[in-house]
Image (cartoon, rainbow, N blue to C red; front, side):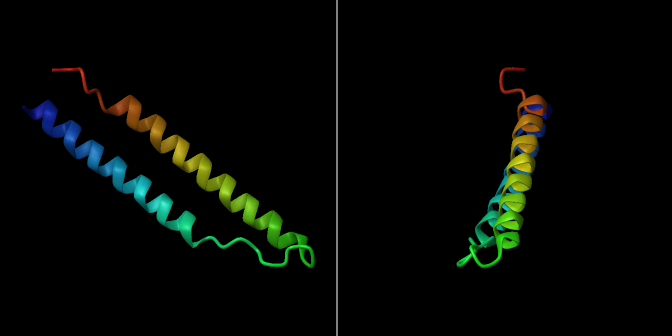
Length: 71
């Protein structure tokens, strides 16, 4: 019972972390006229790359911490 409660709590925590990353991702706007200022496009790509790395790390940790088959 305690193990199942841990998995539920851990799953909720990881899901909320993923939700926060997705929320920030939606706020990053694609530069309208990046040809005038290439640095806007570079910054946009850097932000998206960083969010992707954070998202992947959260998913990796989630798989390591939550064990569905352990009872």
